Amino acid sequence: MVVKAVIFDMDGVLVDSEGFWAKAELDVFSSYGVQVTDDLATQTKYMTTKEVTEFWHGRFPWENLDVPSVEQEVVSKVIELIQSEDCTMSGIQEFIKDLKSKEYKIGLATNAPLQVADAVLEKLQIRNLFDSVHSSEFEDQGKPHPAVYLTSARQLGISPEHCIAVEDSYSGLKAAKAAGMKTVVFTNNDESIHFDLADYKILSFESVQLSIL
Image (cartoon, rainbow, N blue to C red; front, side, top):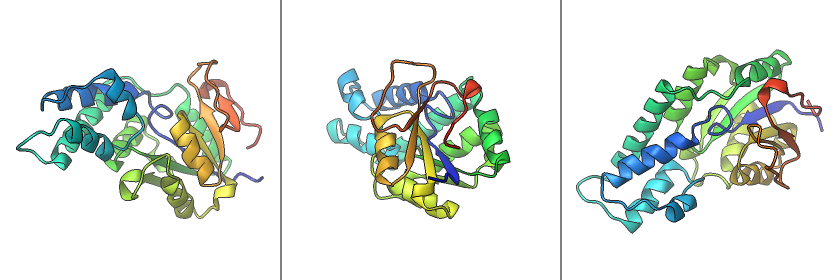
């Protein structure tokens, strides 16, 4: 297989931001009377922001404010945290710059809204390195559905079998596999993480060489 494009997930790969989502959702939803429990929150972990907001509204309906407005509050809070906190994954900028120098197409495929992706790329100062930036908010379904990856491949002009996806979750790996791509799981130095869906594993972006590339 000849790899021509590398497509990155965002949360948990480019930035260590998953805690930001948990905090933003707890703060915002609780303010509208939602009883955010760990058990229920686990069910929402890999949903799109729209799906998460609809999930909580379905269980604890709030009044006087529509679902999109509450969703935007969550998104704005996450962006604020990304901009103010140190959340960049070590070595990620250099890793992507190296791929770009080797003339690979670079894509981003995320379940997060595009405005969050824009904030992340601006924070990391790597927007110019990406040939495609795509969000599941423009698809009927988010990951684990493959749509966001299939669209990303089309935007890059590369067939899925020539793309490799870098993910940190089972849901994301499942989406990329269903799209027909090779997969890499990024574990952020956690050697205990193993996914059968992953063809390769990266512990750290600071000391990695992908033999397939």
